[in-house]
Image (cartoon, rainbow, N blue to C red; front, side, top):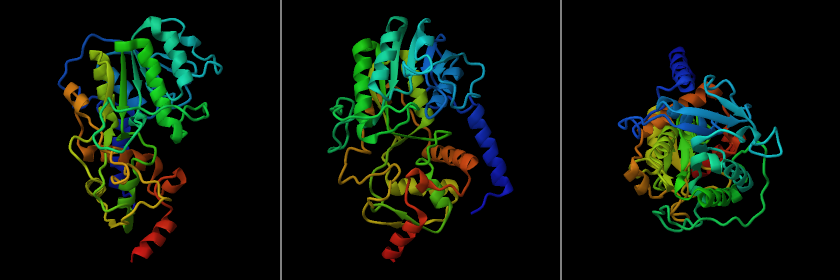
Length: 371
């Protein structure tokens, strides 16, 4: 399929709204809750991945935000928001020296990837911050051998070497969850009940777009034969970037302590259901062929075989829902992510170059073997 003039105009309009906000900033979690008195919030990061959604939600709630980052990623975002230039690495670009003074009610740590850097920021900010909220991950859990894992499940131990990359990328997946767990322990030790640990699953929606979130929508939109793993019955959990941002602000405003699984959607979802929703959103005419197994060479977005890892996409969100977590409609999440993908990358994007899915030639070979 090709993008026609009408599609192009719609893409531009939605992409512009995503970029400027905050019309999309406050969703069902916060919509019915009156804003409290403005908080002084320090955001570590704020311009990529989950960051823009958190900043927009905070601004929409009337809070006073300050961003601390290097100023290299999308520096044009949020021109009216105060910024402190610096680096999570103490030895680079002046390190954390810009945070040597100042007081904040809450710090929201969006880029806590390495324990040493978390330790440095916690030690510096502890005397001058009322509450510390760290964005973690469901990857902290040490075992996925049973469904329904809640916040009390055992966590991974950090027992392998890893490299600290200066761009704070979500790299080194073998150690990623253990590094997050180690960071959580540092925050909890220092702040106790004044700490919040949010653990999202795969985040999708809006401009939070690393390729994996848009893969199935784009693949189905392209038409033809589409290879999918398993038989369609494996469970899927994703959460909208706006819903994570909403709950982050809710936790900051209400000082919710402890750990929180931020996993969605509201009702159980299978990969077959997800692909059907993606097809509806895109108008895709792709014909799905279920592979039966999970090809080892295929990095499958958002899905894993339930028989092997029953805990992967069956995490409990009971605690967060009781505290107020609500979810945007699944198709809205898929739509905003897909629109942003097309506006920034177009229809000819090579997902395989990002390690997502399969090269089309290899997919055709596997489809040919199916018949």
